[in-house]
Image (cartoon, rainbow, N blue to C red; front, side, top):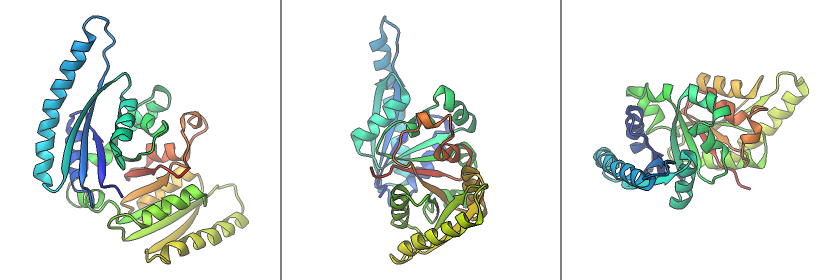
Amino acid sequence: MFETVLFPTDFSERADVMLDCVASFPQIKKVILLHVVKETLHPMGAAVIDRLAEEKAQTTLGAARRYLASLNPAITVTLETTVAPDVAEGILAAAEETGAGLVVLGAHEKGLRAGILSGSIPVRVLCQAGRANVLFMRHKVVDSLSGETFEKFCPMLFTRILCPTDFSKFSDHAAAMAGAAAGVREVILLHVVPGHAGAEKVREAEARIAAARGNLTARGVRCRSIVATGEPAAEIARVAEKEDASVIWISSFGKGCLRELIAGSTVQAVAMNAVRPVLVVRSVR
């Protein structure tokens, strides 16, 4: 499912830690190491500066490729450098060109929040149209990647998947993908009923989520279901912690989200606030 991973890197220490994690993802076959050089706007010599930056990036990427090969010799590693006026657009263009099934990004809490208005790279990659699925690894997660935490969020990333659902076709698609993920041991379906809704809405949700659970268990997937009440993004993050989920697996609902930021997209808020890794599944149209 995610055999080809695009890993944009800024050559930081955190990026090196994440590279260790990426190398151990289940069933990974190919890693595309990408560095996007932001296009120089200076009218004199800009092309020369961009070319020198690309050449320097290639040298550093080569060292990263050798390191990745030492971690997992079975992985094919390719290098990509590109010059683009916008880093997020460069990442999305590379994902389209390479056919990567998954883009892995580190996301700092401050950067994510600031990105609502200023356009941080992780949020813009999520918001702009694209077909690649996106995995967000919060820096709080990355900074603790050692021992049992490393095992849970890297080689065992898909063992216990929390899959929020709103019973749409997009959520159904995401749940079906979760059930087919490499190494999955359990899928936990979650529906959050708004806190102001009444008991009838809760009973309706319980019946619908039971049917969704049945679809997965019929395919041999171990599955549980939870109905919670409250603010959706906060409840998703809370349940992920309570259930010790290895990843939150959430549908993008097939929409761009720039216009939704003011109103507060659930996907945006989960990516901003959840401590667990968040995998945003690009939904079927």
